[in-house]
Image (cartoon, rainbow, N blue to C red; front, top):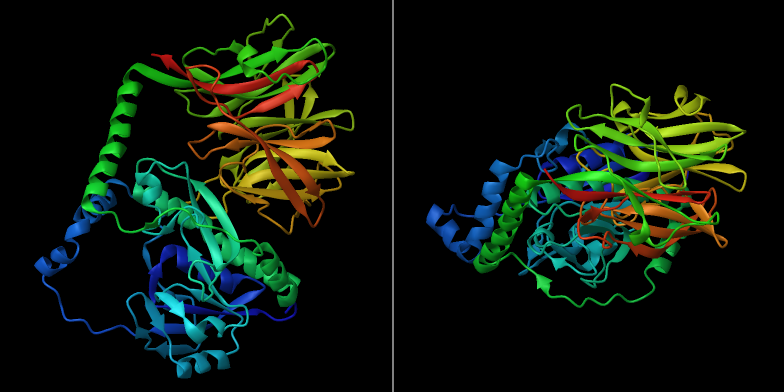
Length: 553
């Protein structure tokens, strides 16, 4: 397995496939570990042409749902559309097997003769991009099975259409899983899963974002299959699926007219209420702080005092540091009319007095999340520099105002909120990465390590992404130790960007393994004007957070 490429076959209905599938196939063929070796195409049925009346009569019970989709296709057009048709012939050149399956009400039954033809190609993995429910011998025709997406959280949402009920029901997150199909229709072997934030207003935008995010699961699992070998890979898959998962919700189907009408009313009610609120109020990030008598973490947010910026800007992502008995807070400052964030600093004393902020770092691209780390008696900063497509390390030449670019840590990367932890004589770099254009930066956490800080030789962790869940992937501040536990603050971006925080306990952190568990969720509930909170940091006696508040214009 390690020396030869994985042979991948595609189960398709047509050579015109959506852009997300095309992108995935291209990734496979360009990878060092896999290649497309077979096309299995379903022969189309010759149906007589239907009149417009016949088509409308067929969908009469779901007419409003399809009408809603048509309207959305005009109103919401994603920049990177996951469903734009692409010609598969442009990127594949391999044998093709045509099959004419027996069709039952919901399933496609492929004949034993065709299954034998497919088996003779000795395919390792079949990817299901077409066909309907598959049963029988075809499920055993590839060495490691048929891999298939279920675009929904299989624990709470089975059926379809994908990405719709999450918006109609205003669920916070939209899930997707990659599984190996089995005869148990609802009991496939889960290979990977991911969760993205649900778009509350648009079916198309919601579906587009999480399809782009989910498509990366295949290439990662193929890489894992190649590197570990089939026996170990399948043993781990079986081990991860050795407990039952009960499904307690209804089977979701295409929305009926009444359901669509109620759901669309709720969506546009939210849109109108939001528009009215924006006429009289605006949202602003502010800083909050609390000093303790001892050098310890403050844990009651309702006791925190506020630092409120002028109405023409916001202050967010606070990182404190203590120098010569004084406290300084570095943070993102964004003036609304400029549209770009810079890094500023203010001095704060234990009585709550603070200085006027001073800009310490300003670029022609957006800066935020000024992560601070002291190393070898020097102070360093790693601000978020997503728009520059790289992770930048700055050295403090004259505290607190003078900083110089020291090193590009990682180039050609769409990374946000880089956070460094020094642990067991290694530097561990955590950051969220958007691998596919059209996906969100809030969904997946990646990990790298190095023996030195100022280097461009960071090694990616083999389990990347170590978290693929919008509810607790994105970093929210310094990783800290508390009573022997390593605690990683993370953002909960499911409800909306930066809604709340999640504290994660890091249980295992090695070059080959990573595990964290949920400790506590933090919601912006301690004051009526709060909308979000998404950064937590602590230094000496001082604990700082930020919060998004609603203010009158």
